[in-house]
Image (cartoon, rainbow, N blue to C red; front, side, top):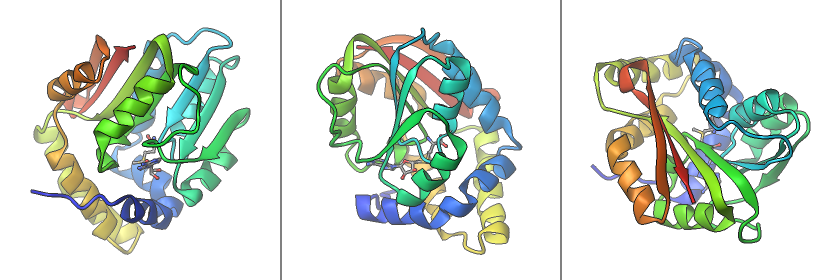
Length: 222
Ligand SMILES: C[S@@+](CC[C@H](N)C(=O)[O-])C[C@H]1O[C@@H](n2cnc3c(N)ncnc32)[C@H](O)[C@@H]1O
């Protein structure tokens, strides 16, 4: 199965669904996505004054938990959807927000101590280029946290069935969420991802699975 992921298409898709994004996330995950996001940020043990980039920040959930858990962190969020960023702006305090493409970041080499990306890499047509950028902007020894769907099991199947129904009811349009389901189906499982990350130069540090493995986080080190 091939999934159309041209950057303009993805940008337009997130601009269109932004107004209902948080509501639908809460609905289709029964609020679990927030528990997972908070827990995986804790795994990073971010010290005060660390420089952190939340890439594909969207409406800023992960940046929010970074700042909540470590208020002294210097946090930046980057995303290429203006509408998602407008919502992040309302949610966040003390976080710099920038419009930008993760495959072409404007930061100097070795800038960040931590880089997080949640449910983002799956939407990028050229993930190798994004991984190169992530590696480049992280300081040596810096940590990269990747969060997304994990194993394609029964819990994941439930999500695939329930999501388009919820999107049809609340967004009045199931199409964008049909794309998300397709992208989930072709996305590599965590073990394969870890090996892709290793090929990009990262060293594996930790993996944690949630919801019977349907969601997974991997932490890698530069
Ligand atoms: C599914 S949302 C995830 C948002 C947030 N990280 C979360 O966990 O809720 C994916 C986000 O990635 C952004 N995105 C996709 N491709 C991107 C790219 N090449 N550069 C920057 N942002 C991108 C989209 O605009 C969208 O806001």
